[in-house]
Length: 428
Image 1 (tube, rainbow, N blue to C red):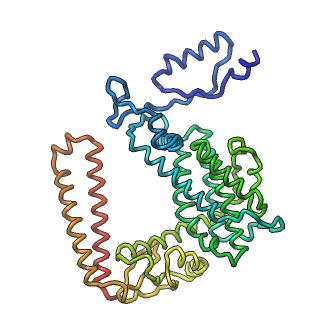
Image 2: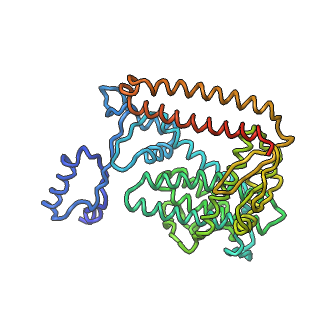
């Protein structure tokens, strides 16, 4: 029949490894016997969902998790993304209800980012306005380059059935690159209504990146992405300057998959951005370590080893000042550390932040010493457990490993506090 021709053979069978011989092999044999044709060309074998103790879920144990209840509590997209993020190819998944919070937090992050984007778009615009790649700022080129790299990884991962790899890549891109960095960088451009050209370029890139990101995320979170996309489409439909061609479709579900355009990947920008991010994090670390409020103005001094690096960093002066929330930054070759300043090192680049007049050194020393004593006490408790042979032999491996991780983390904290105290003790 026509219906049989349409549905047989199919492309992929998704199954648990427990029924490969009981069911999958028999389907292949029956298909060959009756139709002289295998019923599917690919078999995706996934792991088994276990409880958090590693036991199979069963009615007798009463350890099952009702997916309908989880969907009611967290949402369908949150449940889907959580399970996919937890599922590594072929491995069983230890699951408890709290693990769905990861997916819910991610879905909320995407929703809030999209909401922020749409609140800062102009629904009307002149069709005469032409935006080209020459109008892009550094951050625009960076996010487009990252998006194309992510599109390539996601596409390849999905083609190879590596769903966990695809969603993890998207998670990192959306949470870190798009939300934590790009949206923060372009806020002054979006808020500056006087510079309409820069604002419109930021809007154009924002719409384009958000649109493609929703496409990539759609297989994992179809309901939320469709809802956002429809709102976005409606909002920019009257502004040809910032709209994109794929929004002419009726639904996100039938839009073409984003194309991989390696010509839009600027490797120089991709190499530069991590360095700038590390420099910004270094200043933020100093601010955090010294308990300096974010609204308190700071000045940073960046000492590099040669003029080539200085010239390179000078080009990104605006980025460093804005993202590190600085009053100003001085970049120079082999600069000396000022008196009463804190320091960090990033790839042989030294960052100094003068602290004179910003903190009470004696009070801060006392705070840090108290913190050091508490951390040392905590380390002693952890080490008592690890030095106890009975604990190491008899405790479950994951608990022992957790204590070892705690030990390493506490040692790192102690070194960090000691470095802060050294900075506070030195005047030069």
